Every structure is written in structure tokens, then in C-alpha cells.
Image (cartoon, rainbow, N blue to C red; front, side):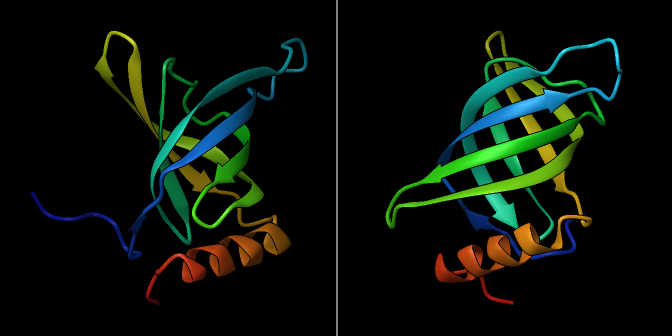
Length: 116
């Protein structure tokens, strides 16, 4: 299978808490938690116990270890794959409108070994 990713990725194991918004004015915000799997400058893959709606907006609070760092990024759910009864892999595309957060995200990835 041909690799579709356009940006280099690094393994990133960090706990996350996500606030999910579907954009529907009548719906309330929901939350989800789990672990990140890998990351690039444009997005990351996460693992959670429940699936998230495709294309919904998410606010991710990441809690990294070794070294300890916390960062908040914003993005959209780009794909969801069910791995098992209680595990879902989810692709998050980072929102380019949040430029300051993306700069901090890129710096964190470089500190963790991403080669650009």
C-alpha cells in the first residue's frame, strides 16, 4: 500500500482530553479522552474508547511526559477506524486558523525529534 502521508511523523504517546463540538447550535459540547499514537506538523492520530463524529471540531489538551509538556491544539476529525469493541483510532487534522497554537505545536515536535 502506498503511503498517503505528506509530512514526516514521529511517535507521540501523550494523554489527551478532547472537547468535541459538532457545530450544531442545539447540541451541547461533549468530551473524550485517550492516548495519542503519532504526530506530524499537520495532525495526529489518537486512540479513544469511543468514536468521534466525522468532521466535528475538537479542542485537544495534550499532557506529554518525558519531558513534561502541556499544549492545546484545535482541529477536525478527518477519519475514524474501529479497532475493537472498545477502541477507535481517530485522525485529527489541525486547524490552520490557530497559527499561534500551530507554531507551539511545531516547536514541541521538533524538541521531541521531528526532522523537517
